Image (cartoon, rainbow, N blue to C red; front, side):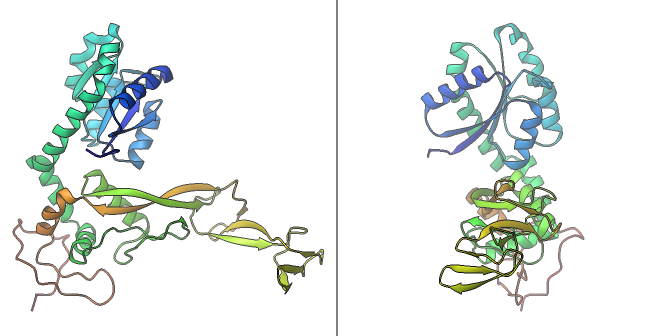
Length: 331
């Protein structure tokens, strides 16, 4: 097992307890990446941004209880294993949280927390095997594959043998990424990618940051260069490295003042005032490559450019619904 194989979310309002748990995970090894949330609200926000292999939830939080969170997470189809931790005086509630949908229970004692990393690893391994083979999860994935936009995206990834896909963004700070524009874009593309990530068909990796307008939240941001004296955007280059302001001050200068302008709301702001969000690339989970190949078999891809007919084996899954895109017959 390689370092960082598992990602776990710890939800605990007691910072000291969280530090102790993190210490035991560090002593156990580096195979588990531990994220932290101090309350239920932060927990839900993090679940929208990241897919976790397991959740460790304190039974008593300032804005909820372990039982309430477990029930809510199961109602919104969060399939990851959940371990609820609590003090010795709350051990009698173990049955209640398990009945609510938790997979296990741990007591906040030295012995209980020392064995928590091994307990987490065991549950994740069992969950991954179950997620791959259990009929319930398989049926949900195939129902998802029948969506025409999901079907088009997976067909392109499979038939073109792409390493990854990324939604088109307007500003990129960091790395260049391969993109697949076409059938879906913007919010719809992001929803599809989030859904496929939730079902672990895709996994995402952060590759740099993008700047966000602090006023309207748009990423349609461009740099604006101006005179450092009067702020005029009208200037000319006279000699190497020297500029002449054609605005109010008429001064010469060697360094441009740089701010950023939003192309949507026309506001101006500095880099210090801007918000930043991670750019992600999405790659096909190798555990599901054969399943995806079977789901998209018999298709032709027309995701971008001229439609390309791909001769593949006949489709062996049950008939598609009306939402499935229609394709021209193979020659």
